Amino acid sequence: MTTIEAIKLLERFRDGNAGLEDVLRTFQAAPVADIGFAQVDVHRAIRRGFPEVIFGAGKSPEQVVTIAQQLREHGQRVLATRVTLEHARLFLRQFPEAVHHEVARCLSLDPQPLPKRPGTIAVVCAGTSDLPVAEEAAVTAEIMGNRVERIADVGVSGVHRLLGRLDAIQRANVVVVVAGMEGALPSVVTGLVWRPVIAVPTSIGYGASFGGLAPLLGMLNSCASGMTVVNIDNGFGAGYAASQINALAGAAPQPRDSNPRTQEALDIGVAAQGGGGQRMAATAGIP
Image (tube, rainbow, N blue to C red; front, top):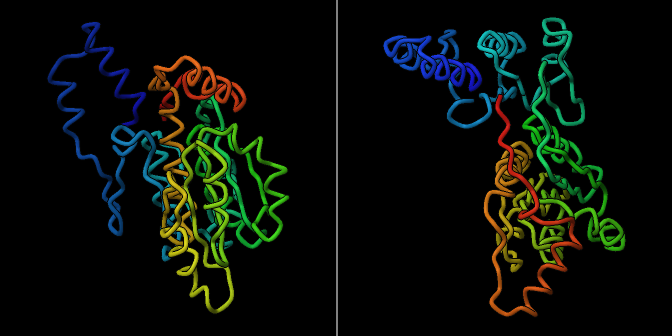
């Protein structure tokens, strides 16, 4: 059952067109589809606001397609991450309307895209080699109903490139920062914005980066307040979390300072950065 189906059923019950037993029977139905090799969670969209996402790594192309078929039969949109070209070929044969996001290593099937929420999520990438992880974050956030601003190749080895895009970064409600090597970029960005920053270490780097462990530890040890760190190469997790934060961007009013002069300065800062959360309606996308 999708969220829309659940709402329609409850509306029918409210209007007297469905009995209590029918409603209970529907909601008590097994929330999984048993396909042998997998138990597909078909109620996740109701609990979490977005359907189960298929992690393609380690799955055969046939398994990915079979799970996607179950999701589609239950009216769900489909996102598959960490897919190969073999996954994509079979998936596109089965679902010609699907999109293969080759750089992001993702597949999406979204016949009725969610309306876009107000505000943007900025996905900031240190180097071109980090783009696959950054694109995974961007694609995830987009299919979840967000506008994404992509800002690539602004690493700290040429910090003037970052400063040249600072206005766009400061306007975003949430900032995802992807970096490998020594992983310094998220700390720099966090020190320049007042929005939540999600740092993503990548496995890009020479030997002493230890497959992403060095940037991960660097980000975890950052002195920049307000920065959250996800696992190595976890662009999907960052994009998902950024979407959840963006959905709440306008849910709570901005704090007011008792000193009128201080509050005036805060208001000027909010206006300069695109209006802030209090002027932004939080719209939760319904899958």
